[in-house]
Length: 185
Image (cartoon, rainbow, N blue to C red; front, side, top):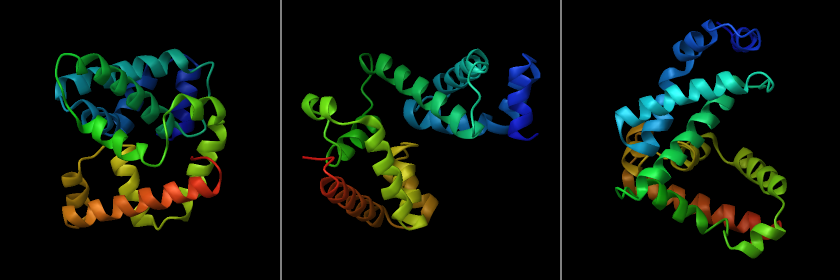
């Protein structure tokens, strides 16, 4: 079923929308959730919460790209769940990835107050569009899907060392790009 048809099912409040969403994007949402939570049961729970949140948000929202819309919901719910579980059990996958990115995107409060969020998003989109497809894929696998270095190297048929080097170079390029644009101190 096409995305527009699934969105129409949500819009018309037909429960079949959830079934069709699960059928088309269930594995995708589970992968996102599992990469963050590292627990199958919690990932499944997060995916179910994703369907509920999607049901409650369409309408009034009408997403342009359903896959991205649902992926963002799953990712945000998983990160929230991760934060709740972090106090009980330490898992550093998310923290390591965010620490790596902090080299490029400062998180101090002065920058956050001065920085226009939309300007940063636009700059990131432009930067990513200028990368080769392979480098963009590796960057997104690490910082959007939160894949481990081992998973990235396996998926891309490169060594872990090569994956680390590519990510380091892309982060440095991003840092320089943001500095040139006045978005990084």
